[in-house]
Image (cartoon, rainbow, N blue to C red; front, side, top):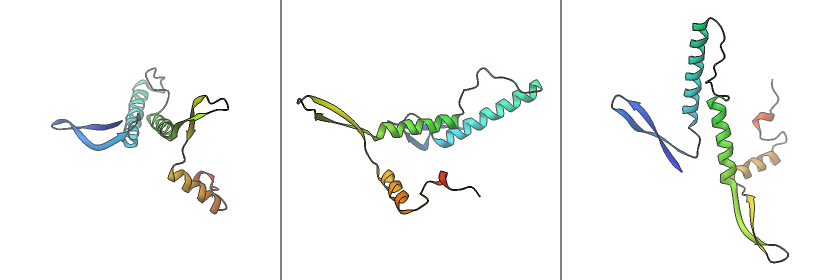
Length: 125
């Protein structure tokens, strides 16, 4: 499902050039929401003279929600099914994850590059 994000202009809400697929908001929208929430919390903290517990604050930051949404989306899009039969000729639906071209590239890079292609595994200097 595709969704166009509206932006506020002097003429009101207009369609933007940002179109997303899936349930999550675009990354730049998540970052802006996170910055806005942080600024609101700083303002509340300064007004009260210290750190306050905000009961309305989300448990997760909008950026965390974005990355979790992306991971859910990838799992759903990679999941495929086909019909197969078992030993007794019963027709069953078989669920499996399909390998995407980028997944294949990552696996090939991991095999070709001795230390692996994952940036998260690079030693810190």
